[in-house]
Image 1: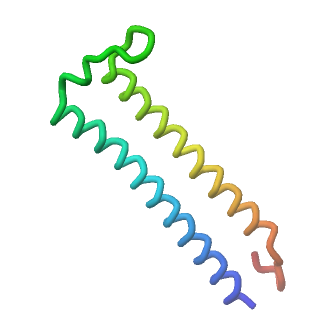
Image 2: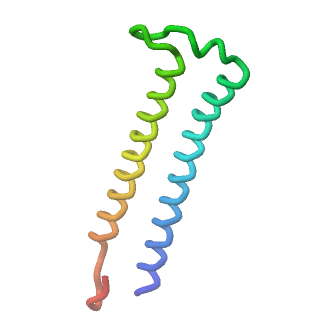
Length: 95
């Protein structure tokens, strides 16, 4: 049944798109926190928080690390889906 394979693939694509949007919104919320903190309380960014580094530096590096982490999460989730799809039943020589 080729329709089942197409349905499964479309479902996996929707899940991947939904995960991408969720991770994007999470990052956007964190980034907006950084922007609003700079806009409405710029003095707070001068506070020393860790090892002589101010909040602006720590928050900025945190955003970079968060982006890398979210990309890793997304990549691992999508890789897992592609492995499951590749292991699915193949009938009639169709993949």
